[in-house]
Image (cartoon, rainbow, N blue to C red):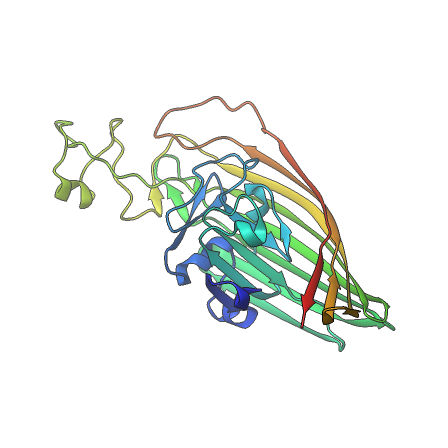
Length: 335
């Protein structure tokens, strides 16, 4: 499809992702021109060619489409979590309405996970890093019956948080993520294959705190010169020191920015390829319908960190996103 239509695309294999130590969706854009990503309320906000969504609610749709195995993730909460056992990832820049429909104004990110193989294969890895980070990842799969193959993958990622609150010594940016996936392929009949997926995640952590650049003189509270502000020597209207040069240290009365997300989803996809003959000559007829039923439950506790303004904590604010879709395509390719 890409060869038939001109487009700007960047792609990385799963091996390349591992070598570059990409563990989150937002890590990907560090290696792509004209793309950035920031954390907003604990979820990645991807920006391609200046197009993005400035929103912290997990129930809204991003103008940057987000796909996993050709299945559209309709809300921002669908991009929260870790990446693991990936075959490849593709980033398409610019509007993609012709191939992918609406909500792809700026482009899209498409992750393709590893499918089961005809032989038993797998891997396991363990990492330990700064802030007591521990990452355990592994996958195993192969044939379990004639014409039926399964691959099971999982990942555990936790740390103590990379940001310290100098106001009360709390930590921001913590991770405590557990994710799993089961992919299965079934050779239903000659030329007919069924693909099945079940995935879930259990995320308990802290969102990243904002970085601040003050623009007022710390003594007179008069506006700072640009050079002084860029040097980090100014404060905010509430007297907070600048921390954008060292975002590891922040100052806030907010002691928690919890981001709790539970996801459970899956899909069933059936494909068939057959040769047919028409009056115009040989043609290839591809029938690839599939359906998916996904559910994501997001329970953020607390709120956005707004300077030193204290806000009441009334408990979790649950948001539930359900995605259901059924698609069917019949493509005739004439030779």
